[in-house]
Figure 1 (tube, protein in one colour):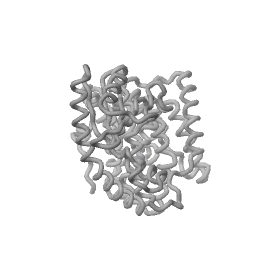
Figure 2: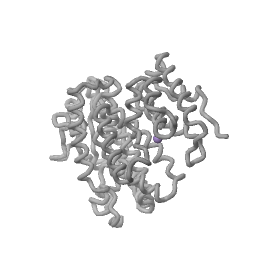
Figure 3: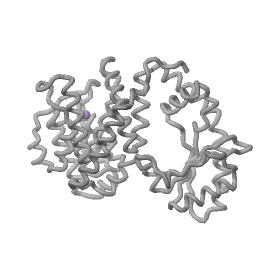
Figure 4: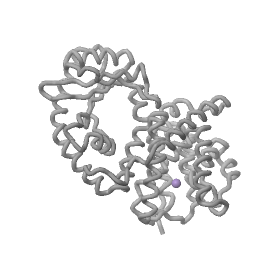
Amino acid sequence: MAQFRSEEEVLSILNDKIRSNPDAVALIIRAWNFAKKAHGQQQRMSGEPHTEHLFETAKYLSELGLGASTVSAGILHDTLEDTNTSEEDLEKGFGKDIAFMVIGVTKLEKKRHGLATRQAENLRRFFISAAKDPRVLIIKLCDRLHNMNTLQYLPPKKRELIAKETLDIYVPVAERLGIDVLKRELEDLAFEQMEPDTYNENNRLFAESLKQHLPNMKEALTVLQEHLASTCPFPTKVILREKGKYSFYKKLLRKDGDTEEIKDIVTMQITVPETTDCYSVLGSVHALWRPIPKKMKDYIAFPKPNGYQCLRTAVTTDAFGIIEIHIYSEEMYARAQYGIVVDLIYNEPKVTPHGVKHRTKKLRQLFTYISKRSPKLPHTKPAL
Ligand code: MN
């Protein structure tokens, strides 16, 4: 018989915000025991108990910093679809809020609808729920992330279907919501699944290019850190960031496979306390290294549609070649990685009529965006 996770293990994945509130902890444990009982001996294709999937989904949600209601809904997210639990049971046990999220990620019963209608209808229902409460989307993305991480246990046809759906629907959704951490991981996993040979070749080129640039960038980092420490009156944090592998691949396609043309495999990321500090630190950088004309972009004054903000510049240096630099305030940096999740952490969404209308409009735009977007991995792919 498969082993279930203990309550201690469930407690160990909870973020500080949840852990510091006894009611929140009690809610999670109640959800866990409910799900464990409901799913009983159900197993994943891996042979593990189904609850392992719920555990991992809840873990991702907790790591993102979401609250106890969302993490509980993550634990309960398959109860309607895969067990005898009814919507009423959920509402009675866990309240309207959590029940709504679980209903939102639940697919329609198979027997009632034909396949094509069912898929379209599932997607439509899902987006309507997500428009009312974006936490539904985040749960779905975390659910998908664990499924993508355990694809190897599925038959090849199913694997491919899930990977393609991930790339066509869930990656653009994560991108539009600005959740870069999930977007990166999902697209790398889908890429590996759909084009294993290209994926491996791309990894080889990526590693090679990284080996060439990283030592240089580490030296440049020290130089910049010292310069900023002596010129800025506020604290500055500088780190190196590697480009995502799939993003490297896409850029390589645009550059006809010439890795020499990819100057941003490692970028420098500067974080400062306030927005005004961003402009000030930019001046400081340009005093040290000469900027390349027209490479400066002000995404603070002109944010990207998903709310992303930063200042970008590229500089030429005698010792280290060209360096791309991104400058963020602390808040912008959090948003650059976690997107909408930042709002969900600090303000639990209010479902007001206006809010729904506003979000539905945004979601409709998102829909159009997804439907216009052809699958990102062409079947006739140019050789690298
Ligand atoms: Mn699931």
